[in-house]
Image (cartoon, rainbow, N blue to C red; front, side):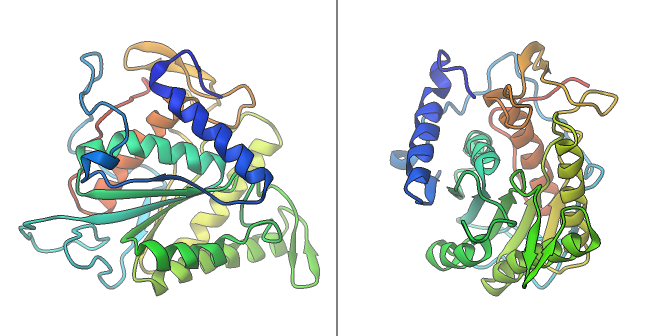
Length: 312
């Protein structure tokens, strides 16, 4: 998945191997648990943006397909992150806990957020992920149930969810089999998404669901597009939630899948050979975009530390 010859990502390859080994014994993987505010626990990534990188655009607006439905303020204590525009406050000490959760793609996004959050030492990023999971196979791993445990353990202010790549499958809703793509399936999947939102709300946290990027395989790619639409509809209008559409982020100017592109002035690989997973560069492109959108959604200052911009 990653170029092992690249020293910057050797630790990521080792972490992914560990994740696969742990999955073999049915264990959930806490891929990263560190506080950027403590140097002893900080990731081994540089906080200096290489000269070849360009600063992130300023004055950006929310991208197409990105929306939020503010509820009562859920940010507590010294955390300024909120879906509502709040009066200016001077936080002597800012501290926010962000829980990044998901499947193997969620793990990749978590790695990207590690790099991008390096400019925000007040963010305590916790990454939990388990490969081959999703919402459709709760018999294997029940994310709404497990999320309740993580919420009680880490008390996050914001939950970033990134999953669904393993959900192009039928669902048993009660004793009835809901065929993928049918109205019964969309109804059942929406309920599962809303369960995740309900658990997050119960913990007084904000849920930001990151939609999946464009996929190469067809009809699999069309199925992922349907999942993204279902998630967005399930969250629209639900207080305390937001949705970030990433389908165009790794696409070419015509909106089609591309395996490589010009990032920071250099042609680089964006996706793995399966047309599903992201390369280390691709995950940073997505993480840069997510970082920018989080700043706008949560009305706070976030400047990506390792800006990766795909030229359109």
